[in-house]
Image (tube, rainbow, N blue to C red):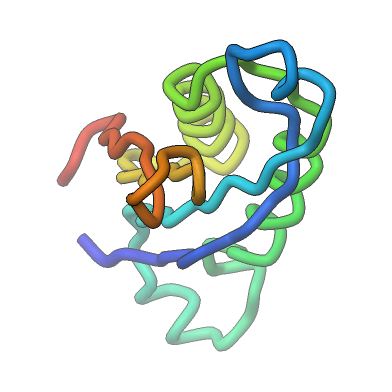
Amino acid sequence: MDIVYINDLKVDTVIGIFDWERRIRQTVSLDLEMAADIRKGAATDHIDDALDYKSISKRLIAFIEESEFQLVETLAEQVAALVLEEFNVPWLRLRLSKPGALRGARDVGVIIERGERS
């Protein structure tokens, strides 16, 4: 199994449980590892034969910017489902963090794995 990754994708969204958080946009950060077989893309040197991380990134930015979840857990599950379903990815590991959410910590968040690893 090969892995295609996106690291530290920052997106502004409405996220949080407090009233003040529902009125502002906060930055979330994503690290995404996705299972892929890169051999065909490497052989043809054509994007149609590869996992297009730019398309994935653009789709995630649009989805997250429009979302208004309360919990990072919910956002993480929805992002994972979107990638698995829309981009035919069999397995992924997602780290979703909310920088500055906890005083004294750089960030807080969740790490999830979904799908089947081959």
